[in-house]
Amino acid sequence: MRLQPARTEEEIRAYRASLSGRRVAVIGAGASGRACLRRLAEAGARVVLADAKPRDAMGEAVAEAEALRAAVVERFEQFDQLPDVELIVSSPGIARGHAAPVGGRAAGIEVIGTMELGYRLCPAPIIAVTGTNGKGTTCRLLSAMLAAAGRAHILAGNIGTPLAEELVHATPETPAVVEVSSFQLEGIVDFHARIATVLNVAPDHLDRHADLREYLEAKARIFANQEPGDYAIVNVDDGRVRELAESTRATRLTVADSSEGADAAVIDGEVTTALWGRREVICRADDLPLRGRHHLKNLLVAAVAARLLGVAAEAVARAARAYEPPAHHMQVVGEVSGVQYINDSKASNPAAAVADLAAMERPFVAIVGGKDKGADFAELGALLTERARAVVLIGEAAERIARALGEGARPEHAATLEQAVERAAQLAQSGDAVIMAPACSSFDMFEDYRHRGRAFGAAVRRLAEEATR
Image (cartoon, rainbow, N blue to C red):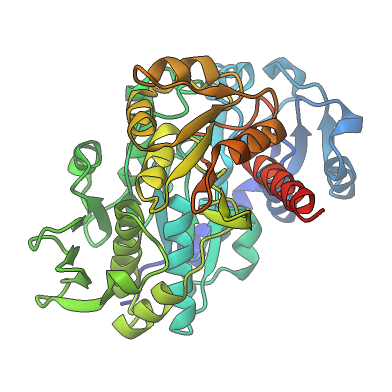
């Protein structure tokens, strides 16, 4: 099936022409901001790069901006620090309530996100994936399925490479598989996905969103501009997702754990789809490297999208069987004295941690904690109390997690991740696993979840070295 492109060539040419000569401010000197800066400069805009950091802490962004003849505003906090601008492009890390976009909107200036700018210049049909957990896995699975079928495509968005960066590879014949976060969805206006899905919704980022309702409203925006002829893939096992998808005008396709009435489900241990009036078996669930109901759901969504894009069931199955989880996601980083060490640093909210811990087949010692985002730890506490041999807590959320554990639980506390790994090693028995599933973001102790995952791996390597002395 050939999907319609996101924008026609005429629409893109007209929008590029409208940018020529306009003064446009890009807020945020990260990867997405810099990619937008380049695309705007190519279109002839007079660009300004603004960032909260001082100039000497902005790294390569300053040299890149100067090469594009862009003005640079350092220590940026207020709208009035910007020269006269006609458009503001705001990076995902800038909240809607930040003084700059608020001031811009109050002055009648259009404020859009970096994802929206990428969309407005994108000729490729967009397959957009959001959800609290599983976005990256689903996008990588779909990308692998397209690759297995020999289909050119791009993989972009929150997964690592900004959509604006990948535009150089985008054509009407190359589907764009785009991971979209709630932060990015806050900044969309016309963003239109031909295939869209919300995988699941659990409370998250409540340090950014005012409440759960605001978070849900951000996620629902992925369906807002869909129209008849588009597709919304709906996880009907998640009540919040069902509610979010009620307003879509797209054709609804359903995925479920085991319902024979769904368009994709796991039935009698077989991953199946039923899109054109007949059910076909993709593969056996037992043949897959991914474990857990949540990962099977990600696979079902990716399989439906791939089949809509014309990928043969055989290629879908081949990609699914060969899939390897990325770093920091249930990644086995070593085994020391009969104990397996698993880096699940990407599990940065309670729902993700619960799903991965529930899928554990070995007895385990869990390392949990990090920056407190205001999440509810009740379900996590119950699972750890029931399943974990021991729990070692780290970070600013440690005390709240400790209170969520059941009576009789005696969690250990560690000041650093290295100390947590050392203590977990002492508590574990041969045949066990030590899993770091933080259930929190990393910013209280680390740069990001990758930095946290690397630190865990380094601590395990030190354990291994000491064990061989």
